[in-house]
Image (cartoon, rainbow, N blue to C red; front, top):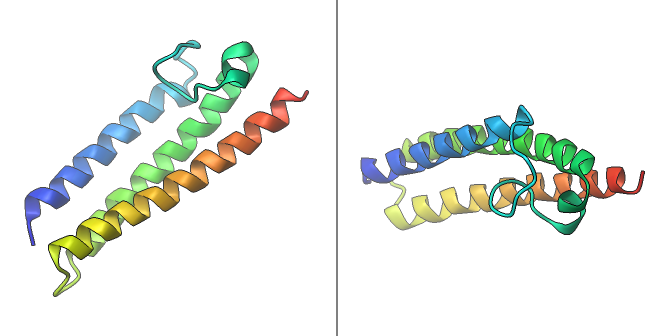
Length: 113
């Protein structure tokens, strides 16, 4: 299997973790390019910062899960490159969907208050 692909997945997820940190630290002001950008967050700064902090924590966990999955799956003997790539993609999609859904629900719960 190709080591370069595993390294690419790890680097991508480290980048994802680095993107999460300013969100967690509430350093990103409401904008149209970076963060959890939906109508409710863009309409209220309180909702923006709380939701993006919540989502940032999840992005950090998602990136850690994906780094771990990339390395562990790479070590599985006999795993083809296609299966490896699809498994890594599957882990990303599932973990991202969970994090996004949790943050969406969180946003809706604080936007009503």
